[in-house]
Amino acid sequence: MSVRVGILTLHYGFNEGAVLQAYALATLLRESWPDADVEVVDFRYPAKINVYGPAESPREIAIQAAIDQWLPLSTRVGMPKDDAGLGPWLSDHYDVVIYGSDVLWNLRYRRRFRRFVPGGAFSVQDDPFFPPFPNAYWPDESIRSVQIAFAASVGTLQSSDIPSRQKRSMSRRLQSCAAISVRDSWTHGFVHSIDERLGQETVRIADPTFSAAFRRDSRLHDASAPEIESRLESLGVDFTKPIAGFVCKSTIATRELAAALRNDGFQIVGITTRNDLADVNLFDHGFHPLEWARVFGFLDVCITERMHACIFCLLQQTPVVVLDINASDAVRETKHTDLMGQFELGDFCFPARRTESAGLQLAVEAIREQQWDWDGIGLSINELSDAQTAFLRRARAKSGIGGGESAVTQDEDPSVTSQHSAVVS
Image (tube, rainbow, N blue to C red):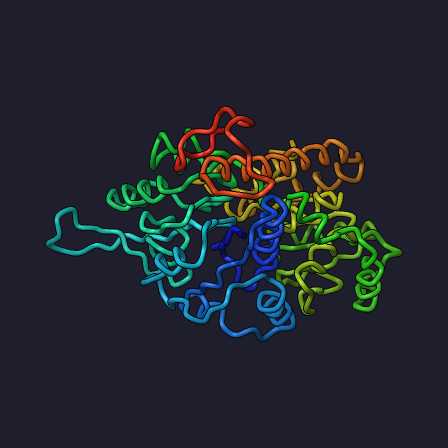
């Protein structure tokens, strides 16, 4: 009998990376657990859908088509339209519920002041883009299915923003997981602040787009590359020149960098984020998320605010400079600093709000003067992939999910403990 696995993730926005990570996680689970029937739970918050609005531009239409036609979605027939009743529905439909990956646990609080109330202030969650806690992306003690967190992230959420009663609820919910993994050190520290024991048992793993299973399935270097190159040429990309991709907003620093590169003979190509920097605006055109990912393999250098653009540069040996839009005085450890730090590329990650063009230009000059250690980066990627597979094997063994060739027995893994203990690295 197959194991029914449902993935709860942020799969339905106009974001190529979000779609790709959802597909990558489903691919990894199918390969790691060959007996599993894996699907993405097609649960969508109406408030978030309203914020996104209908797909209108070619880019949005292409992403929407991939969500609806390419992702292995569950049927929405009979699914609750809000959080009420979702727990029993998940329990009835899945043996395992996976929370991951992406910034699932990000929340937005604001302080509201009221006269004649002791303390004078209380926290409010009313941002429609961030469903208030508790929401579908947090584990739930009432769910009968085995629950596992895979590379989850809180984004820039700070535990000091959260009311104490909600922290206690978060702790209980996380304790109901059979295994917990997070994507970055900030989230690891967050879990530790919520529950010290859980923090000690939580492990860090990479975004699922790093997985070997996804790279094999997506065939980033396959025979379709000439077709993508031909399409790029038809859109104006000139492969007789070095190509610089810009996935970022137009600022003084990025405009000056683009001008300097153009003076050095580069063609500037704008991707994803609309700006006035580029000679060729690919953000005006629609690409399937996999085609979008492969575009980064045709660049000579990339300047990006997007984490998944950075990932697909690293996977395809394209040097990349990261503009960290999440960096602030309060949040110094972000998904971008974590990602670049894992590959010892921290010198190529800059806080977007405080970066001057001189620093960016020096980084690009360093890239042009010295070849990156792609062999070493490739070894690191393989290590990250191996850690993902090992986590899923241990999680399955510790949660007591029966059957399947990939399950690890207690004899194979002496660290196995109880059914609902978290995986220890």
